[in-house]
Image 1 (cartoon, rainbow, N blue to C red):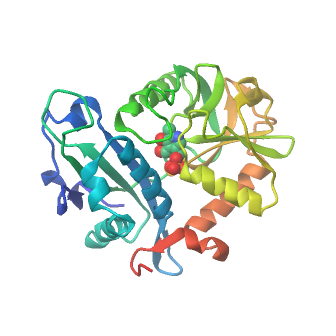
Image 2 (image 1 turned 90 degrees about the horizontal axis):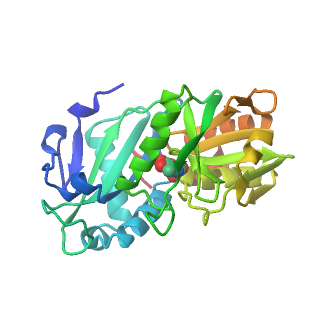
Length: 312
Ligand SMILES: Cc1ncc(COP(=O)(O)O)c(C=O)c1O
C-alpha cells in the first residue's frame, strides 16, 4: 500500500509533486464544484506480472461528453483519447505503481473568480492516484432507501460525473451511515429506484436481471455496462426498465456496481432481508466473472484492458 501524498500527480499540463498541485480558496472548482471527474481502476495480475487499466476508452467517452456539457475548451481541444490514455499510463509509470490502484481524473473551471458559469474561464486537467481497496463491503450490504432525492437530468444531469453533484451523494451516504447502514439507495422525485449513492443498481426478479434505464437519472456506469455484457454472455436475461421501490423488497437478489464499488451484493434493505438474506447465485456469478475479467483472467474480456507497462 502506498502513500498517495508522496506521489507525482498530473496538474495543469505537468507531472508535479502532490504538494505542488494546489488551487486557491477563490478557485471556481473549489467554490462551486465546477468540474467533472472519473474514477478508473487498474488491477494487478500477479501471475502475469501485469497491471491492467479497466476500460479507459469508456471512461474517456463519458468524461469527454461531460466536458462538452461544461464547454471545457482546453480539454476538448487538447486531449484526444491517445493523449488522455498517455497521461493515465505515464502517471502510473512515473510513480512505479505495481499494485491495484484507483486513478482520479478531473477537469475543472480553473479561475479565481466569483461567477459560477461555464464560459470565459480557463479549464484544467488533473489526475492523481489513490490506494483504494473495497469502497463498500462486497460480501453483503445493509442498505437504506434514502430520504434524499436524486438530482434530475434537467437540474444537474446524473449521467455525467459533475463534482458539485456529489453533495447529493454525500447527503444520502451520510444519512445511511448515521442510521447504521452500509449504503444508501436513492429514488427519483417520482419514487422510482435510481441507484446507490455512488453505484448503479441491479435486482434479480424471477431469474431476470433488471436495472433502471439510462433515462431514469442514473449515471451511465461503466461497470453497469460491463455487467450487462457479462450477463448477456452468460445467457442471463437482462431488462432495462423503471424500478418501483417495492420491487426492492420483493427482489430475489440485489447488487450495486461501480468502479469503486465493484460488484457488491445487497442482502438487506430497510431492515428487510432480500430473499433468505444471503448473497444470491446470479450476484455471485457476475461478481466472480467481473473480478477475474478486470485482472485479465478471462481471455474473451481482455479487450477491455490496457496493459500499463506495455501499452498496446
Ligand atoms: C452516482 C454514481 N452512480 C454510479 C456509479 C458507477 O459508475 P462506474 O461503474 O462508471 O464507476 C458511480 C461511480 O462513481 C457514481 O458516482
